[in-house]
Length: 436
Image 1 (cartoon, rainbow, N blue to C red):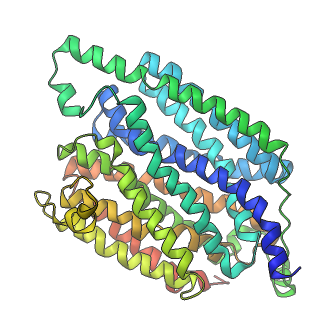
Image 2 (image 1 turned 180 degrees about the horizontal axis):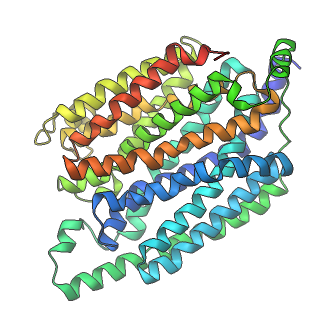
């Protein structure tokens, strides 16, 4: 098949998978708004509120291998349809949770949603890697990332408009200062505001699950070179692929810093008195979208996937250090970067956390093709191992919450430094290893 024919044949699958990336981007980055929201509704500490992210992302570790087993038996297409159905069930769980204002039910629902996304991620990422040439895989994943993070920009804004529209400027501090009767009334009204949006999402996801099952999406066929087939004959386990194992560890650290940047910015802003802090995740996601756009232009025309990954790690190190050392009483960073657009000015610390989205953008699309190269028949299980790395989004933000309670929200961002250092190692050396 010629390059032009291959490109045409991949357009329809990319359109369908792109829709899925938008959906799980929207669902995932609702967490950035949910965390400060549930901190108010359920009266939580910073550490407790970050269990919202923990219960969501730990599903990727617990369910990744079972979902890989499921995909091997159902195929990628049916598996993705089941994933959408799982997410719809999880969204329905938010209705009794909101009615009872019970944090445990919220967490269980988050776990079910995370399980559905585990199936979608395990199937869709290798699909995009193998649907076209290997050297342009990062560019294709960047297209998916644009849809994913574009949904991440929209999700907190839509959540704030739909759920907090009648509660302009509300924060954990303002609720805590209310008289007991008024506080109970406000919390109940806030909680019930979740019911209609999550019911609507559940219905939409159920319809999409049925539509995907009957769509013309073809099954994934993976072709290997003779050398790759020979290498595979010597291996019996995914753990014998060093680039894959190191890639999973890299994703553990990456997803951890990505979730910290996206989901803790609202807590940090609320702590510093920023109004409507539930919408701050949109700033981080907007910079991720910019990073993905830059990746589409540069990869692989001007820089390789590995070089883009190394640059991202260095920029992450610089920005994380700047967050810790910045003066939150100043606003010159946001004034310089986006003040000329008429957007709200934020404390320097918050603005720098938002800029971490730009550093994080190209890590995910670069790691996947580098880690999956040459896996062939091990691709589904290898993808599951990489998906297990998403557990970093459960563990590291929770550790951030503990550190923020022990030190401060700002100093807790020191946790990011060793994460970016490992990402840099994978970029310059780890992805090249083929034997232990």
